[in-house]
Image 1 (cartoon, rainbow, N blue to C red):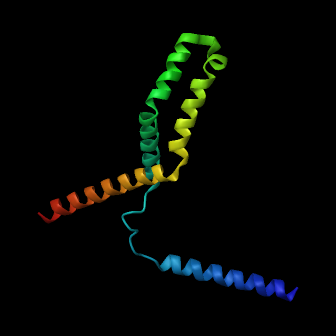
Image 2: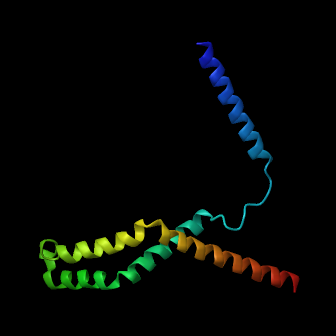
Length: 121
């Protein structure tokens, strides 16, 4: 029982130390940190990039759907699977999302440099 109390006191003490150090931190976040809006933009960019890369498969699925109407799902399963496989390949591989995040960060840095030139010039 006393071990549990001591453990709880240590945890509370550690949490208080962390909270204190965080509250004292006044430094600006690095430019590479994405805001929630920028993260959303990176994901939108990934979606656009993915559909550009899988355009042939998406078009084949759309054409099949137009031709078959109500019977689209049993008839167009192979096109659907190919499209799904392509889309998931790009959307699930973190490398592609990281590339889009990097592009957002580079854009952010470029804007910041332009602002600095305008304010100093």
